[in-house]
Length: 373
Ligand code: UD2
Image 1 (spheres, rainbow, N blue to C red):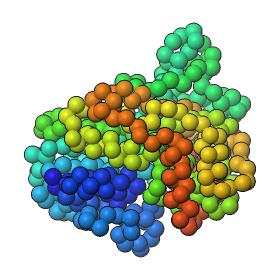
Image 2: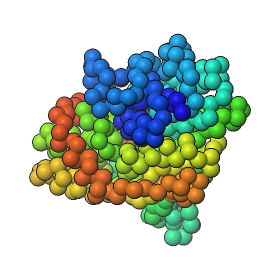
Image 3: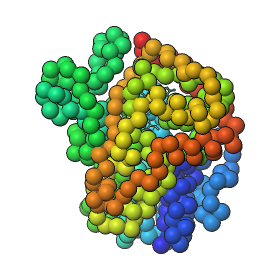
C-alpha cells in the first residue's frame, strides 16, 4: 500500500515508518519538523528511514496536505503538538495545531480520497483524566482531580469521591467517562472524535489508539515539554538531579514506542477495531521512583532525585491501561517489558548530547501558576 504518516519524522511516527517499510509498504511522511522537537533549522532527521518520502509541511496547510494525500491508500495521523503543561498557556497554538490540523486533514481526505482503506489516529490516555479506582466500601469509582486543598496538605493518594477512603488504582477500560484535564487532552479527544465520526459517516474504517505514556529511543530529550522518562534521562545525562513532583509514588503505564508502532500496524492489518477507540499500554502501572532507580542504574547516574515538595496543576495520580480490548480486537500483546525498554532507552540516550532546558520550562510553568505548593 501507499501510506501517509503525518508527524512521521517524530518519535512515534518514525518508528511506525520503519515498521511499514519493513512490511513492504511505500511511505510518505508529512511533517513540519517542529523546532521544539527537532531543533531550530534542522533538516531531515538522520534516523528517518532513507526510503521514506518526506514532505515538509504543516497539517493546516491545505495545499501541502492535498499534495501529501496523492495516491495514498491509508493514513496514520500522528502529527500533534504534545506539551501538556505548555498547552495551558499556548491555548490557541495547541487548538490550532491539533484540532484545526485534524479538521484540515479530514476535509482533504473527504475531498480527495474517500476510498481510503484505513485511517488510524493517535489518541491519548490524557482524555481519561484520572484512571479507574476501586474503593473498599463503594466499589469501582471514577474520581475527578484531587482538590487543591488536599494536595496542599501533601495528602497525595486518591480518595473515594463518596466516602473519602483511600482508593486503589485499577486498569482503566475504554468506557471510563472521559474527563480531559488539559487543553492538550481536549484536543486529543477532538482528534479521536473527529476521525471516528468522519470515518463512520463516509465508511472509511477508522481506529483511534489511546496511547499511554510512551518512552524509548528518538524521544526528543532536549524538549523539556515532553514525557517524564525523556525529561529524567536528559537531567541524568547532564549530571543534574531529576525534580520529582508529589512523592514519586504516582504511577503511569509506560509503554515502549515499538509496541505502539506495532499496535498501529495491527490496526491497519485487522478490521476488528474499526470505528472504535482502543487503549495501547503495557497494562501495568510503574511509579516514578521505580522509573528513576532503573534509569539511574542504566544511565550511570549516582546522584539523588530532588523531591521538590510541589505538585503540577492538572496532574493525575495513577492511570494504567486495561488492554483487554486491544488483545481481543487487534491481537495486541506488549512485547517489551519495562526493564528491557529502559535498557533500550538508556543505551540510545547515552549516544545523545541533549540540552537540559528543564529548569527554564519549569520556571515558565511556575510563572503561570501551574506549579503549586
Ligand atoms: C501527559 C499526558 C500523556 C502524554 C504525556 C506526554 C495527561 C494525563 N497525560 O502525561 O497523554 O501526552 O503527558 O508524554 O495529561 N514529573 C515529575 N518531574 C518532571 C516531569 C514530570 O515529577 O520533571 C511527574 C509529573 O508530575 C507526573 C508524572 O511525572 O506526576 C508523569 O508526567 P508526564 O508529564 O510524563 O506525563 P503525564 O502522565 O502528565
